[in-house]
Length: 390
Image (cartoon, rainbow, N blue to C red; front, side):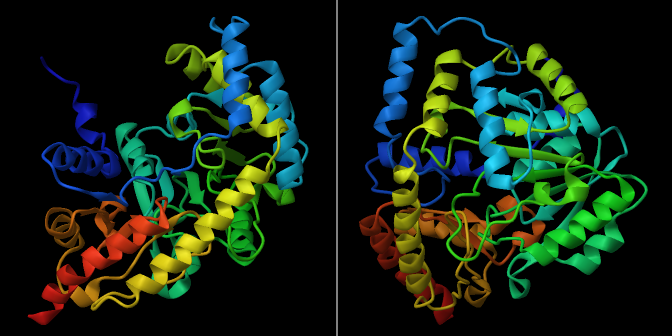
């Protein structure tokens, strides 16, 4: 079968590949500590599951509107207005099966062959994959450890060109845990507004902020009509398998994104959307408890990594990942990740899974129990000792 040439431009998400290999080792009898996948290990809160059960019993198993159920879109508009400090209309909301379709559809709708897209590197690999897929030109902005993994603002300003059609930002960030502060966002907003360039703001980790105050670029007056906000339920409400996300964008773009939904998934499952409605309108204490637990785990794993030979690890301000510098081990990050999996039974990702500027780093998710994080650190020590003994 002849496959279209564009398929050769489509990348993947290495976390799922490593997960599959780790699962294969488990089937062969190995015990693996999973630090590769970005998934909260908490269960979905009971009131959300109960809402889905009630929705199923009430017959919410049929097609719904492609843009999402009106009651959920209204709740999302209210939630975004309260959390970002800007008025939002339900007509600007599109609900999708997971948040990934928002990045895919946004790039598909705005970027043509030869158009440039600025995005963070290391960054979520699907950004670069979809830019390449649609024939766009990826323009990476390195996130540097010495700058708190924030945008290199001088380079960013130089890289913006007449061909730039979209800017992608992610804060708190995957894989580094870095957070764009107000000063950095002001620069991005100023340049985007001056040149009328839309910004895709991936804020899926908004609630996982451990120090400081969250700032959304959507809240800047000049950015209200230029921002496409990406968010969802997977992380904050431990609903990864439910596949429920959304975008908030100018209404004319929402119409195009809705047509892409019509042509792809038709609609998001209605009973899942009603569970999302319960998530937004129900108690939020479970979210706070989960974030507090992740902060404790962050401190445990950062302190442990900094005690390993050849490793130094900055303390991330957000998300639930650490991005330790392993240049002291003297080996490529992919090779180190392989040795940790095969020799130590610890599944992690090499930094280059998130772009070329991730070389010299690993990404570890601390969405696992304190006992397993402690075990992973113990298992990792002999590998790093052998790497630094040479």
